[in-house]
Amino acid sequence: MATLATPQGFSNGGNDLAAAGLTQSYLVGELETAMMDTLDPVVTGMVRLKIDMAGKGSDTLRVPYIDDVGFSRRFSSLATENASITASALTTGYSAITLGMYGLGHTVTQRQRILTQPGTTLTLPQLISMVPMSYLATLRYLACVSGATISTNIGSATAALSEDEIYTLAAAIISTSGASDKGRPLVTLHPEQLNQLRTSLRSSPAFVQNLQAYLQAAGAADGSMFMNFMGLGFDVVKTEDVVIDTGVYQGFAVSPGGLGYAVASVSGLAADMPAAAEAIYLDQYGLIIYRTVSGLDTAVNGYQGRAHLGVALGDTSVFLQRGMISVQ
Image 1 (tube, helix red, strand yellow):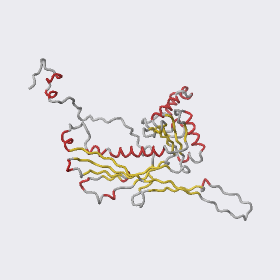
Image 2: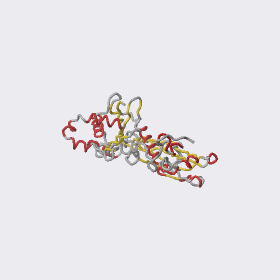
Image 3: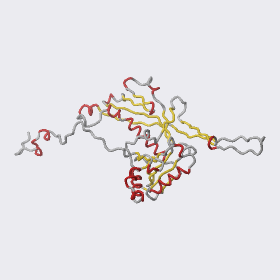
Image 4: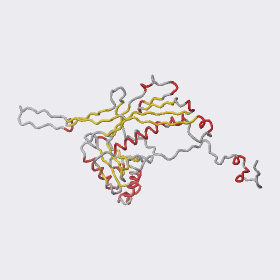
């Protein structure tokens, strides 16, 4: 037995728990989560569901479009009252979305579950309940990867995003035939791009002369989405998933529906899944979540989530698309 010095104190072993090796204590029930990007790509309209591919016989979807009809085709004048009419040609094309396969899982040993102090980590049921959030983060990332492929860019790879770029985008919306009729485009920016833009806006005459009205026009309801930014006819969202390529932020602007996603519903797997898997079928996501039962011989419990989805840009003939680039 150890001899305890006088006076007995916590730091010299006078506390039995400290002597037994408990060097930290935890605030049970107050498990906090790290700061994270919570922008929902579906709620904000960054991506729109196009179709459920289950039972279609293919993993690639084609979304057709047609041009040179309706408002894009005018009548031709006739030279005489009995002149014949030449038939007009149509223009057709399609956009394509290919389904990918994505997975997520966690495992926990039975001993860890038995001995861990309650409230200091997440249990498997709690982890499973958060899988849809990870799915939406994946969908958001895939949307940003697709947006980074837009070839018509506004901005510069060697300069910060400025007030001039948002006016250029507003002009493109007005001057591009039919773009305004699609609804307000959604501009997706990296948070640092938004900081660059705010720095530029500080010297704007509108900011200096009418601060309150100017800030209201650029305000955000929840800090992540700016509706009708500056009254210029487009909305803005910020997310850290914006691609950074060789020191360049690859933000982008797309008409509503211009970024689409497809899924394959998974409820058809129900007949094949063992009851012990306790499978959850989220057809609207093309996502199945189930417990893994193969690790019981090693005293390991876990789950897996498997998603079948794809994201792609629509055709530039149908949707306004602009890259919004700036230096990192």
